[in-house]
Amino acid sequence: MSETIEPRKIVIDLKKLIVEPYTRKKEVKLSELKDYCAYPEDAEKILAKGEDPVIYEYYEYTPTEKPGNINFGLTIIYPGKIGKEYYMTKGHFHEKDAAEFYFCLKGKGLLLMQNKLGEVATIELEPGSLGYVPPGWGHRTINTGRGKFVFFFAYPSDAGHDYMLVKEKGFAKIVIEEAKTVKIIDNPRYQKLSQ
Ligand code: S6P
Ligand code: ZN
Image (cartoon, rainbow, N blue to C red; front, side, top):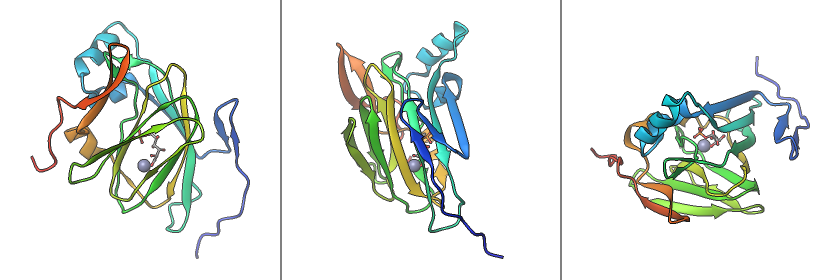
């Protein structure tokens, strides 16, 4: 029998920074992110002190994974750095050719994208601006501000997520703070997809 999805109302609470109701909440701490960092030795130093800060969290509402539906939610990236690299999401590619958008609600940050040819694009996000991720582009978000960086996302429910490509090869660029300014530089640990 085919699944019936009922129409419904979902509230995005901009004060509490929560989606109500949500189907999934995930908190990513430094210990889980460390293999994605450009300078994992800096992550190890923080962890060795007995600290394991939450880097980001997200609330998602997934009606179903059936094609034709939309997943959406809220991502909150905390302010901070791991060494000189700003707090960021792991980043991923979608398994299917599926686009996504990020609509910034609070704070400021960067949307870093890369396609499988190794081409890179960055979009600055501040409240009111929307970053569009075309199908085929891996995406990571980075908090370059002093407060929480918060954005609303939406993408096709059957998109799927591939984290391995980013974990093993990295993004070609990383975002760091140097001399108190935001810099986008080559990732010293990047391995081209053809290697
Ligand atoms: C999912 C969408 C977001 C991210 C979230 C965390 O397609 O892009 O919900 O899941 O921003 O990022 P990541 O890379 O840990 O999934
Ligand atoms: Zn995505």
